[in-house]
Image (spheres, rainbow, N blue to C red):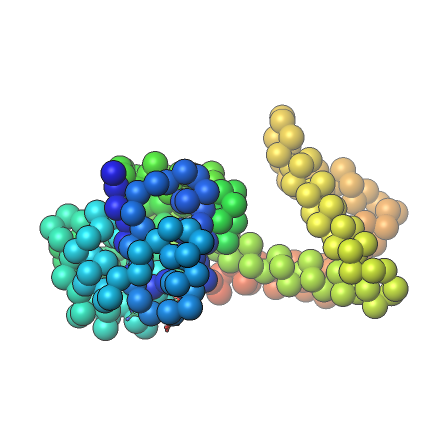
Length: 255
Ligand SMILES: NC(=O)c1ccc[n+]([C@@H]2O[C@H](COP(=O)([O-])OP(=O)(O)OC[C@H]3O[C@@H](n4cnc5c(N)ncnc54)[C@H](OP(=O)(O)O)[C@@H]3O)[C@@H](O)[C@H]2O)c1
């Protein structure tokens, strides 16, 4: 049975481990020892093994997840020696395939991008390149998108950032509701419910063009149109597009 190792037990890899266990993955899960408390919690609740050092993780695992922050990749790579063609699934945002190969010359590198919804097996999971065993393993964490081109993978990173941005937008409206006297629960239900309605309509076949859907709602004279007008006049939609360019530009600078 496949044995997986985790180098860097953090916020993200914790969700990956939980999602894999929830999906029925019964193989060994070997964790690096840093972030002692989180690693011990995963050991107790999700049947993982905490190894004494990173090299032990590498030695005992068939497939590795790399979940450290970007600045830690180089020192970590100097510390461990991978096995020939060992699959290394990097979750490190912006770290290119050639850099991965440079840091870990023995590895068979894979890049993956996913969200915290991996822990409930409902994440969008983007990988490049496809192949086994990582494709089946990661597919269990949600809805899999396999991209052959690394450039396309970088574009997908912008979508992953959007996931994070939306928490802030939704939280603003939620706070505005509670300031106006709604309970936290009512505010949350209104915000999340309406977001869910938006996605439900957008995903309902036949899939309509999103702009067509929006225009059908924001017809002239409606409250939706009035609010949209304020957003546009104040540069919200322009800023929204600039944020995509900012992230994409930074990803390119990192190459
Ligand atoms: N691909 C995606 O979809 C996606 C989404 C979000 C984040 N990310 C990426 O995921 C990575 C981790 O993000 P995160 O938010 O999970 O960070 P995090 O919570 O800080 O996790 C990183 C972990 O690495 C550990 N660590 C540090 N040095 C180490 C070493 N030499 N050996 C082993 N472990 C070491 C840290 O332990 P200590 O606490 O003891 O220092 C920490 O627990 C980042 O590179 C980020 O770009 C990717």
